[in-house]
Amino acid sequence: MHRYINMLLFLALMAGVTIVAYPSKSLLHSSETVLKDDQNLPEDIAFLQGLIQIDKGRTGDPPEKYFHESYFNSHYDGRFAKSELPSQTRIPHLRALIRSYLTTMHELGAETWIMHGSLLGWWWNRRIMPWDDDLDVQVSEAAIEFLASYHNMTIHSFAAGDLTINPDDETLMQGRKRYLLEVNPHYVNPSTDDRENVIDARWIDTDTGLFIDITAVRVDKATEAEKGKSGEFRFKGATYRHSDPPQRLYCKDEHSFLSTQIFPLRLSVFEGVPVHVPFSYQELLVEEYGQEALVQKEFWEERHYFDQAKGEWIPMSKEMLKNREKEGEWGRLDKSSGLSEELKEWKAQIKDEDSGSEDSGGFRQVEIVLPASK
Image (cartoon, rainbow, N blue to C red; front, side, top):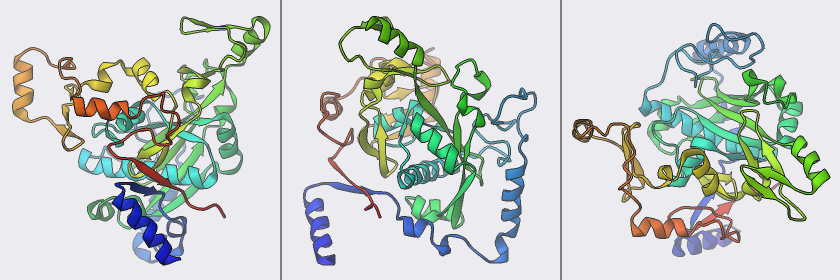
């Protein structure tokens, strides 16, 4: 058997295929992932205190608001965060956050996909953008019901070595990580008028307070009723009349989509683990951020530029920033810096028409290896 597996790996490498898999479940939940000596007692006490400090966060939040962010940054949970993290430590923690979330949702069988800024990061190089301090995912209605019914307020422990990509990150996380899956009880109210509870659930790093916003994508029942009466409905200025029109979907934060924009989900890779992305990812990104965000290689407001050779976002030098400020163009995307022919060719490989490919992007073909179900 080992010889057979080694042969498959050899053939994959020879073909230039990157093999991507979730971290091993047996490693993630083995007894070695929880350190048992007394040296961790202070951290354990702080962790438990965070769980019971329900209202710790920004002052002035209305009583009906469920999730409370920290007073110093709205992208940190007020119960677990003491201060903002510098970029060099924030990104490794965010990377571990999304890897742990995607792994857990796969193990639980909960349908989820990345969206918003996380999807934009995937578009560029399958990684979190270095200036991001939060992550966004969506789940189906069935998934949020499942998570609320069976997994709300559960703690998930991971060995840091299974979540990190390099040894320095593993040292930073001191051996283990714990995450809280918390579902907002107001998820049962589907109304967009519930403005204080547009986030349906969160995946929270109990060490740092960083979290992933989880929003449920719901079927617009009013539109479905309209469609049933007239056989047509309008969406973003277009009228749909064909015999089997798509469903109109929405989130409580008032983002809306057609079912054909989201489904069928495409399978790709994000931060080194398998991930699902919406079917019409490019169309959705243009709607939300504009065409420039998909092609401009200089993001001046974020003080980064995209190095195509490295496939990475690089901080701008002081000289670059000084010159741009002198030119009076601070904060603008440089619309002259389009894609090179090589990058255009890469983007063409992941065009929406290519529905036959399970992989949705990247510089090389990717084979997704999923753990065998037991």
